[in-house]
Image 1 (cartoon, rainbow, N blue to C red):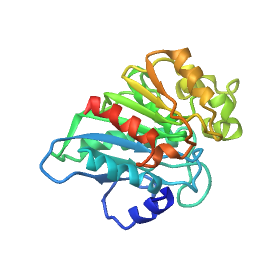
Image 2 (image 1 turned 135 degrees about the vertical axis):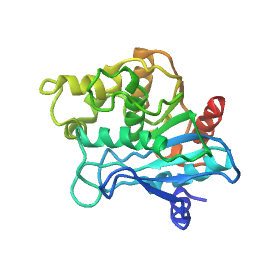
Image 3 (image 1 turned 135 degrees about the horizontal axis):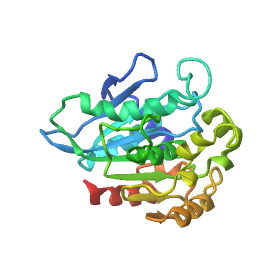
Length: 259
């Protein structure tokens, strides 16, 4: 079954929707296995170069597979770049939404969720956001996203954007300026500049990715250290969000170490 078909079929499901803010994009869907739990929780952050026309629906097949594996999945939407329903993002809105959306797990009061076993999973631009969120405990007091209420124990970045400088105009729009204009924002948001993450991390970057070069993940892993890197052969940028792919199987099997 193709990924497009999986996504289309997943739209027929009705996960529990939750609002963590007043805006139409400040929402998350909760997918939970049957039974009382408590279950580990995976926070899903979709990609799409932070653009409003892309949304969380693309991560629903991963949510379904995680539920099958015994995980609860928190499929998070956030404000993105552009106008219309999904827009209003950029600095600081996109980062505030990711932080607030993750922390909203602590307000649900759902006994089926084990918030001591939370992992972050982000694809492409969502991989950049996941790596940023994994470092929230290291952010200076008062910074966007500092003092997290929910602390992840692991992070998986799928074909991630790890070098914002190479993401060009989209990254500058996200951060609201160039590295020279707003250097502190870049130091906090750019995975390459931010440095090591304080939790175990995995990068899964297919060697056939023509959208985000796998060289960026190799450079990031070498520069910051402390993360594992898997480069599945013969797969491309969107394969990691296909539950049937070798890329996703590598990610999901690794995640099970931290369940």
